[in-house]
Length: 272
Image (tube, rainbow, N blue to C red; front, side, top):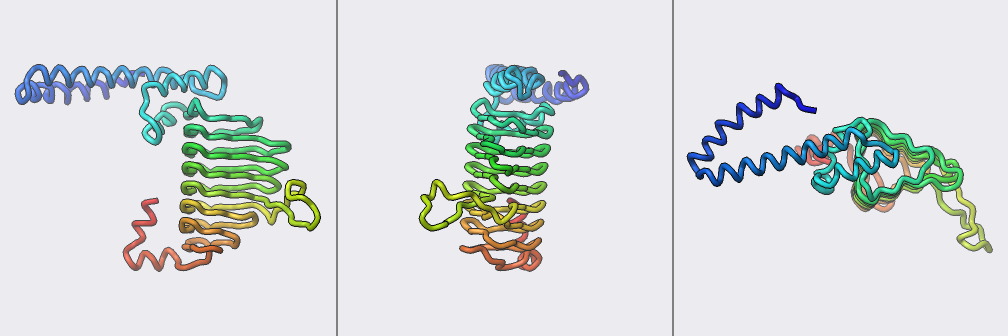
């Protein structure tokens, strides 16, 4: 657990800084500084110890709960997923799925729900993917979900796959409160809504390195291309080509990212 060369390197830097603090602020300030460092060191040792036992078993979930006691909240806690190949799953997350496949160093945040309904297909979360708080991933009637490596699913996102799969590509982001349904209800006359059969136009596919903004609605049978951007609040019912920027209800291509970079604004999109 202890990286000795790194420890001694830190110690060599620490002693001169401590002496500087004594001369400039006094012994009491230096002592307070040492207390803070010791507290942080003990917290780090506690967290690293329990993360060695992380996993989907009951004991593994309990170990992650103990590790989280001394860890910071929300996004600051995501570093815990890097401490174990088993990743980090928040104690409040609900995993009710018989075919859940997790890659290495996955982060699953507070109150995330992964649910399998009748005949639901697998949910696969790629390596280093992040699911932030209050997400819902649900499969049923043959639907499946795949979240690619290093993808980011932000707070309150719903990925609900019935009849057809949902695929989120590598290093793609889905913004706050977006909803993906790979199905809809039929509208045959004379039949109550609750009895209408489910139907689909096909899978939902988000390519690699794409960004879907906050509050976007994506219908079945839609492909959002590689490096594409969908503006917040859009409703996507048609394909979005690679590298396109789409916006509106329904979403339409308003510009290509190459055109935007000529105006010096590409860095704003890349920041997402």
